[in-house]
Image (cartoon, rainbow, N blue to C red; front, side):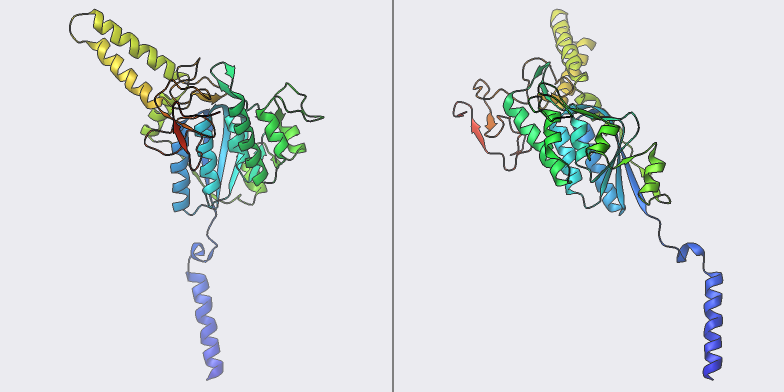
Length: 337
């Protein structure tokens, strides 16, 4: 009887092995969630990245892959993206396809693993206020943010500081008075790139994700609109069109199309206004500090200031545009610097 039972068990097992689909027996494929980081770093991109990470968490992705090619952008947006990467439970890999310049360098350094394609560069992250170099207080703060982000992932913080502050020199890499930008080969030599690859496929193969399911994030219509109006090159144009439309309306009889265009343009400009300091691009309005930040000690504006960076708090928030937590603010006229 025992012999017959064993034979029956073996037959049933063989039948199950033959009849059950192989997909049910196979190990589930890994999932890679790809997020493009391209063009200007702006608040619209930051919201898109945050939403994409949330979706990656819901899909239980095994890795987030950031494909980076950007000339830079706004400090507040770069810090928001950095914090999204840092707070995620999913490991992040950055693939620099062209340039990780300015704000893009911070986002790249926030990633646990960095890969660069031949010809790619990283660095040149000095903060700008309009066409001028930003205040020393802002540069100091931003350089330390760069350093801390690099240090968390085991990279040399002095190199990150040299990317943001031209007063820092590193023998063999950059002399004082010059900003540091690394080629893909230099980055690999100093530990700022873990892999040199020709494309995404080669990188995924090296990381053990050759058979992974690939999901590519796509921006929604509202996210594309937000990116458009927060672009630091578009915002001054919207302001100009808005003012011109209102002036034309005042000079003509009745209310016409010029007034409508002016109001819409000003509304879009207001939506896109924010931090005046940017990295590698011009801020909204350009020139002197705009609606986001005012120089240290400036008491003309009836608002609060952050004691760390003199930044105004975000609308309806306790935090300044640099994201200080908590952001302790003082009223104008009571600040001491």
